[in-house]
Length: 205
Length: 214
Ligand SMILES: [Zn+2]
Ligand SMILES: [Zn+2]
Image 1 (tube, rainbow over the protein chains, first blue to last red):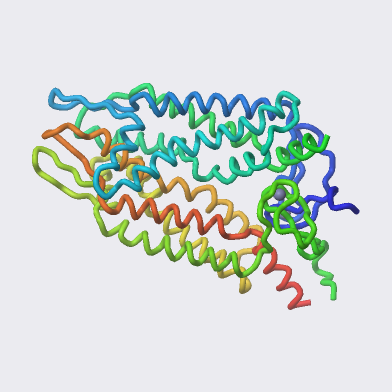
Image 2 (cartoon, rainbow over the protein chains, first blue to last red; image 1 turned 90 degrees about the vertical axis):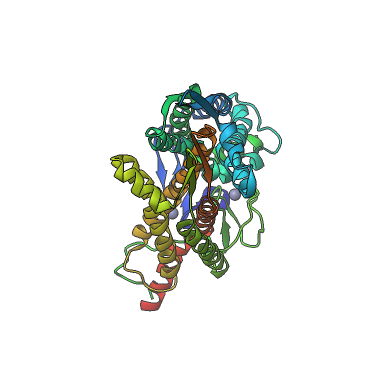
């Protein structure tokens, strides 16, 4: 048997036969149950559209204020940019950089890479140059893109300052909430091995 | 030689002289250095990857100590300054009656990091010696660790948000403490430890044990 017809399970290394899987069914590794293929009709279009939505939401979430604080006649608004710059004073500068990376830059990079890889697939075109490298990076960035974790942080902060002052929600709060949903939808729509298989077959044809 | 108790013997790519890619599942020729499909570097699941796991885990553990000792936040209200450690912040939330939020922070900052240290160490140790938990159990443990570890960052973001938000001159101001940095570093290091662990090792141990007993 030629090695093209085999899939080495990414989790347990067992060789599985690469069967043609019907849309909306799932092929799993015989030993560990890892999903090897889960083709869905229109999945590429769906992921590309979701990624585009996420990018727009991310821009809104970064720019607008997410909380407003009022106390003693003073008021103060904070956007993500402010939160990132909050650490830039004093010895906390690396933390400021890390926060900016985790909340804005890495999620933006991941969604851009997803669009770059999958939009040509969705349109039925040949993969863009270096699409494989772009998708590999999108997968590597996944655990480090933490925009959806930030919203929980905002919720906790809201409770913490509620004793100190009156707090109002800004537009970015809702952008982050929507981003949480879009991120979950995107991650559920992506089947890594199916994307690789599509990439491989499209670049060969 | 064959163990009659085991109904199925599985052939791994490594046993077949091939190099399986952990990113895309391509079975590459055994001598390939990078995957022919996706370009990911190929490395056999071996002791080298375990060494990296232990190194990142130790670094994460070391960074977790100052994260608990030093203040996370420095709050100044009307000229009076107070400092809050990680546990102090949770206790304060609890005393204010915000049990739900206190519980979230307690899980994200204490339970998840500690459970993660133990889980990764257990996974790394059980590669070498027979484990109480079967292969499937350990795989589930690995997947839970991978999924849940990043949520520990919540408290770092809380500190960033509070610092940015609470800048009301004399009335109230919040500044981050040393613990915020070490906690962020600790979470990042343990995430790297989890990512360095090669799940194929879980099953390698099983097949070696089978050979021993056969
Ligand atoms: Zn498997
Ligand atoms: Zn590959």
